[in-house]
Length: 366
Image 1 (cartoon, one colour):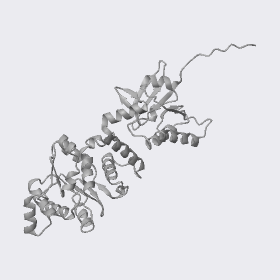
Image 2 (image 1 turned 120 degrees about the horizontal axis):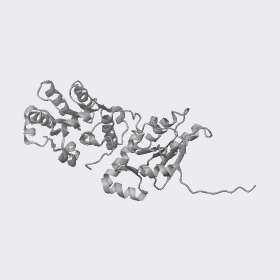
Image 3 (image 1 turned 30 degrees about the vertical axis):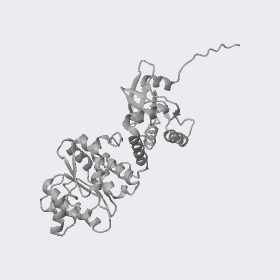
């Protein structure tokens, strides 16, 4: 018998979900089913990795079932290895039906337990963003223009560098404020040994940022002018902070000559007289750090915090050990012989822009 066939135009579930979320589909798209009924899981995982690495906007079908409860958690884990935590994620349950529910979140905040087999998920790419509750993925060239317009070329490069560094960290599961300072240190030095030698007291970065933002601390003292020069002027102006280095002060030269001490020691001695509760930053001179430690023990200095990053071979390691017993003072220390004014300055910059850490958006004041 002849059977009449009628073709009715329609749209895919991911297209319906996309229309409800905003405009999440850009140039390229990848669609992955998590059902392992016909496809081995290892092959599915390879496809997930490829989509994440390839920076595709990715639609997920069959995300869960009664027996498949863990695969979506694994997918999130794999995507977080390649995508920024703030990457938009939209998921729609029963798209186009009475029971329809639309949700928009980020990759970091996405909870796989909120999803069932009737849900379609869309994960953005590196250009995707949320605006007014809508999920937007611009076309590639527009995304580049938007990035340059919004953040500037220098900040764009810095953001991409931080994302690269974060992917290559051995230990990604560290507190946000410590990770923020670590990313700055590695970005400045291109030295992943910072993971091993950057010692940060618990909550030190967040605590110091809070003191600056509340106006409790208004002064930063550096041991040498090079460290002062590396602290971003835009951040200082934005937060009303003054940076001082006493190395070139006439009184410093006179005091050093009279007491037979180094000029950096003399500079710190003068600084403590005028600013005993400042943030003290050392990127060059171990004798200056040792001087501060002596003044703290004598009750003459009560620093808001200490950044200890002198560099070299004589008294450098000892000076860093000397500062560790001051448990009530927030400290960032570069262990061993490594350090430098550029490193000391970048740790200050990390503190001053800590409110950008959650979005992994460094370089505001570049």
